[in-house]
Length: 486
Image (tube, rainbow, N blue to C red):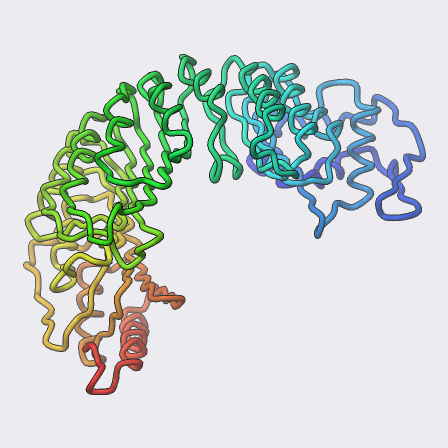
């Protein structure tokens, strides 16, 4: 029962705890009238359950408004309840543009540490809520918010007010929300956070327009970072941005996410050697647990690299033996059998691996499932693998593995491809037998365009037949002799 009350997705459970028959509505759905007063002794049931709540989400939107009775109940609690509404509340999420500030402020208390405004608010309301949160809940360490309800780009008055509101939080560790996924923080906020001894989670969008600010501020000032998410827009040559990493001195970094929208300076593809300074710099973070790297090009979605790197380029990352999640997207790295064995030896605790090949590098000759089985054997915690595959020819042969490899504990395997992939139907039994032998617990997910097929079942024969049907259906678009891929 306590677990059920710990996180409330809405206020309906709280309404049921109010003294009975105290709420009535009249007139339009937006108008509610409180018809009688409440006695203090009638709140015992409400208090009993309210002190269990640690997280609350306030729902409601323009297309799904709150019931008038729910809005009235918030006013009842606010006007008639004498003590702290939710005395142990640690996380408050406002997922509605319908709530007035008074409905939000009533849940701000001394125990609150996370405040997230997912709904767009007018700029004055957003600033007022941040000020109230800081004064009522001085221990808040995380704040998040959506884009204001009106355009504030270039509004210096807004940025100044926002900077003052954010910098007033003394124990801030992270700033999140949908707004900062697409916009960068004001320079004054970045400077303030860089000198904070407690700030741990930095999400930053860097463009040519504000890269000078980032250089002058220096990411190296963030000494306490454990999570770093950078989105580099309008990047030119990767080596030109390496100073952003070389200045880092946060030895305790555990979660790194780097997304680069690459703008090649010329029409010719870029040499993959430009990536080497990036990866060498990443080798300094020995405490990494999660690493996500992605390169993409808007102007040339078909690819940006002229050649393919040897998997040994990943060796700087091997200095983080505790790596648990690794995702490399659009990087020109070709996974080979020796690389699989070396990777498994370096990261025995790996639980998720995603390798999506770049579009323009030479594709792998075959899908190294036997190498994948070796990898799964050496990494007993590996449960999710995502690999890119290239067109497979009809003479592609499945190789049997040695009997010394035990069945893997892996639960999910995804085949992700930007190429056309089609296997002939007569290979399906061998494919199914391979998975039955070495991946008996896995649910196989095949992603191709907008088509997803998840194959998972207790019955081995049923899974074999389903797998054969899916593979056969993939080969239908290329059955003509002229254009077939199989």
